Length: 571
Image 1 (tube, rainbow, N blue to C red):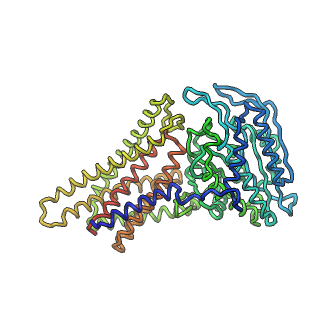
Image 2: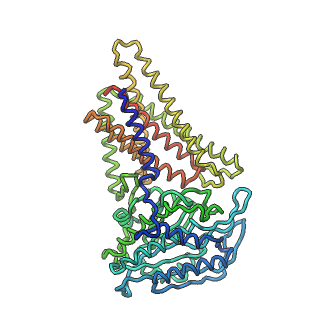
Image 3: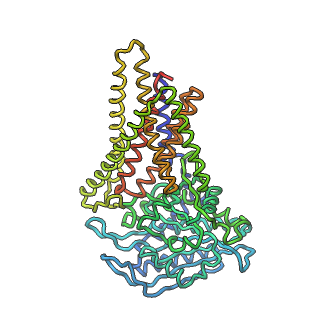
C-alpha cells in the first residue's frame, strides 16, 4: 500500500465534510459598516421585533411590531404604505385553543422612477406574527418570533434598502407584504387574496421568506409549479445557491404550509427558509439569543442578486415572463454549485449515465474483474440490508421519543428531543463502522480462498475482485432505483449522483490508470452526501431518520470499495 494514499484519502474526506457543512461555502456575516447586504443590520431589526411574544393572542405587542415595520418602510421611502384590516377572524381550529382576532396586513410599494400604470412588480412576503402557544412535552411555550419570521421581515427590509441604491436602473418595482396571522393558517394572506386581490394584479414574481429554525444555510425549499424559468433566474443570479427540486416534491406531501402556498399556483415565485433545527421552531427557544447572523447573510447572498437581476432586466417587464410549461430538476453540490436542468435535459443525462454504466459494467465483466452472478447477489444483499437499516433508524427514533415522552411519528416531524441530532450522528457512525467491519470480514474470506495459490499476487487479485463485485453490485442496485425513480417521479438524485460520480471515476481510472480519479469520485460523492443528507435529516427530523440512515448506508456501500480499490497495490 502506498503510504501517501491513506493521507490523501483522509484529506479528501475531511475537506468534503468541511465544504459541505459550510465552513467555506457560506458567506461570512457583514457588520453595519458594510456597503452591501449586512446581516448585522438585519439582526438589529430582529432585536426590536422579537422583544416580546407577538402572536394573535398578543394584540398590543403585535401592534408594536406592526408600527415599527410601518416606520421602517416609510423611512426607506416607500411611495405608499397601506394597512389592510380584516375583522373577527377565528383560528386556529384545534383542540388546544381557539383565538378570535383582527388581522392587519401591511403593504408598501416602491415603484421604479419611471413608473407607469402597467409597471410589473416583484413582491416580498414575510409574516410578522409569532407562533401562538404550543405544547412541548409537559410544557406550554410561546415563540418570540426571532427567526420565524424575524428573519423574513429583517431580510426583506435589508434587501429593499440595498435595492434602492440602484433604483435608477429599475425597470420593475417592489412591493412588500408583511402578513399577519400566518401562524393560524395563513389567515392574513388568505384574507388579502380573497378580498383585495387587486394588490397582486401586477405582480410577476414573488419571494417568500420563512425560517424553520435559526441555524444552517438558507435553503430554497420550494418553487412554484412550472418553475423552469424561475429556476433559470435563480441559477443565473443567486450566490451560494442551496436547493434541491426534490424538496419541492417532498414538501407538497407534508402538512406544512406558508403564505406562498395560497398564491403559488397563480404567481411565479421562490420560497426560502432555514431548516435547523426543529426544537427551536415555534417554541420559546426561537428568541434573539439564538439568532444566527451567518444564516441571515446566506439569505442575502441569494436573494439580493436575484432582486437586482429581476428589477433591472428589461425581459421581466412582461408580468408573465417567468411563466413556463414545465418544472426544472435541480440540486446543489457544495463547491460545484447548482446543477439545473429541464425535465427533458435531465432525462437525457440520465440515459447517458445509464449507458456509460452499462458499458463499463460489460467491459469489467469481459475482462473478468466482476462476475454477474456475484454482482447481482450483492445487489440483493444491499437491498435487504438497506431495509434493515431503515428499520433500525426508525427504531432509534422510537427509543429517543420514548426516552423523553415524546410522541413517536414514523417518518413524521418529531420535536422535543433535544439530543436528536447527536443520536442521528452517533447511529450513522455506528452503521458506517459495522459496514466497514462486515466488508472487511467478507473480503478476508474471499482472499483466504486463494491461500493455496503459488502466485503472490493472487490474494491481492482476490481482494480486488471482491471490491469490484461489491462496488458494481451496489451501483447496479442504484442504477435500478435511479431508473425507476426518474420514470415515476422525475427525481432520483439520492442514487443518481453517487452512481454518476462512481461511474465517471471508474471510467477515467480504467482509461488513464490514475487512481486519482477514484479518490476524486469519493470526494464528490461525499460533498453531495454530507450536504443532501444534512438537509434531509434537518427537514424531516429524527422521525424520518430511517430513510436518512438507509441512504447513508447505500453511499457507504459505494465509498468503502472505492476506497479499498484506491489503496490497493493492484491495477
